[in-house]
Image (cartoon, rainbow, N blue to C red; front, side):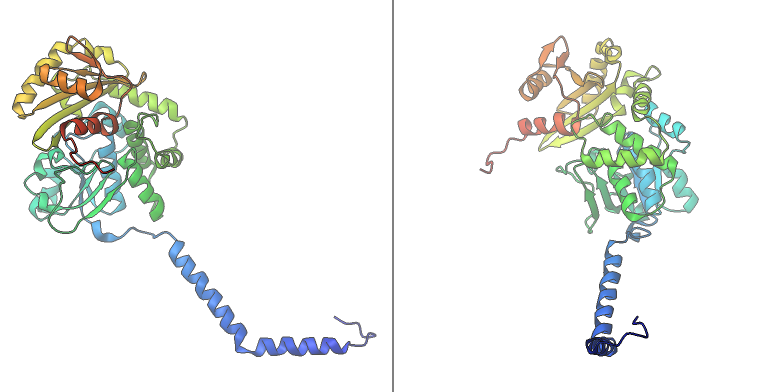
Length: 378
């Protein structure tokens, strides 16, 4: 860089010698090698896997019985994520599920018998993954005699007494989120695997359904972030409008009998030696069901005897007002509901106020009353 007319400073010669010696020394190359190795390790640790682990490949994915939007969406998406198979039985799908399948142009899960016949397989030799539930009482009928085939559980509900799992080690992923669809969506995001718009729409509907449009008490930050990303993938322009159309579809039960309405979202919970059934009807038109109170009470008495239940409740949830009324069939249920919720009772109905979530606001208080803890930790 020196001009020809300039004399070179002796100090520059010393600098050039030092720099030449540094370049020739092994120190530089060792330093560069270490930096490249660290960058490589960082890349390997932070880059998402192209595909998730193959432990669940070729597994059967199924939701609880009877199914809801979250369990159907979760089974379809999880089967796609893990290269498995989503299945269903003869249980009629709800109007809300049919709305989602139609809205996003996706077919329902394959019938379990059709799937087994086409592959010349038996349940007794097939691996099964449960999504959106973990209890024996909610198993689909075709799986109840083969619980040893359950190899995995992906769920967002609390673990209770009778977990449906085999005696061999199982892969269990349970997160306290508002929806199982949120868990599957995040697994897709983390894996880097392509999520088709139709499946993204189903997962979006599953989250909206279980969290009541992200307004329910079980809603978490994870659910909200998942909805933001799924909305874009599914090309849903307005989430409020989409939620409202979903709730209208959920409330369109004119073609359903009272028995179908009860069993559409009915679960049995064991509390020690006590067996309790709790059904939920989420609607924007609660009065339609309240006017059929006598029919509901009669069918509930029949169901209580048929399932040998100690208690039975059906809650009519007003989605818009965020309030619930329980159908009460007798003195036993009235006393238990009064002790649990301290609601206002009148002629077969109890208003239990601003409670809407079975998972968080209906069942836990019942558990505290029916299974009291004798030795509570300080």
